[in-house]
Amino acid sequence: MNEIVFEILPEMQDERIDKCISSYLVALSRSYIQKIIKEGHVFVNDTPVKSNYRVKVEDQVKFTLPDCVEPDIPAQNIPLDILYEDEDLLIINKPKNMVVHPAPGHYEGTLVNAVMYHCQGALSGINGVMRPGIVHRIDKDTTGSIIVCKNDEAHNAIAALLKTHDITRKYRAVVHGVLKTPQGTVNAPIGRHPNDRKKMAVNEKNGKHAVTHYKVLEQFDQYTYIECQLETGRTHQIRVHMASIGHPLLGDTVYTNRKSPFHLDGQVLHAMTIGFPHPRSGIYLEFEAPLPEYFEKLLSVLRGVR
Image (cartoon, rainbow, N blue to C red):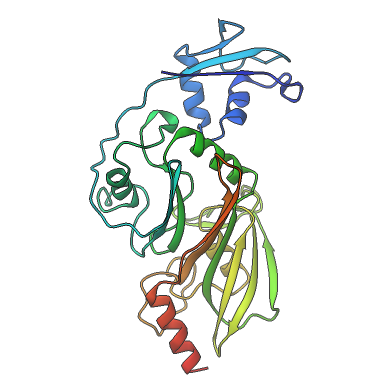
């Protein structure tokens, strides 16, 4: 059992207790918080409370997180391209065609399988299940840098930075068409596609705030090499935003019907740069994942036919 104690601050006055805990430990899901409250693990001033309890200034909140459950996921000795590692976290350059989390059809060969083997038990246990602290994801066909946390403290710190948009995330991509301006911003909410639940879309009614900044790196006859910097981190954000302005990613088979004359395996998208204050020292760190071989070869071909 891991005991956590904190005091209610003036800005939390009259908030629900489950919301307060969610603000204090942003990596915990609201459903998991409500579960531990229902099981009697949360006390205010030494009295057990329900999820709808409204807190008061100087209330003392005390709760225990149950010991983590070992996941039914095999650890696999899969080579990892590690950009950085210390006692708190890993920065990994994820290859193409590697799924981050196990899911139906992908129970083995995922980044989680590989990290479980590499970390040998040094894993975060957010939401009651011991697992590598994957606080953000990139798609199976997207390559590049991803943060993995080794303990709950690092996990909570990185999750808080993601929530406040204080992590630098720059991607490289090749899109269809020639962009008219050297740089721009797409500010459009993203949510589930109204007719296809497997897709995301610009959704003004039910979408969440999403902002992508882009700039042109190189222009070609029919394509443009760009850098995208995320201000938010919604599912498929770059793919949806660029498609929404008429410049879908080359190789994307979900958000465009445009054919690619190149032999590509999914969208041309690479999470190149990631930067953040270290959760223990507070020192800003930044890492760059080199472009994968297929991306470099594609650029060489495009430059040759420009």
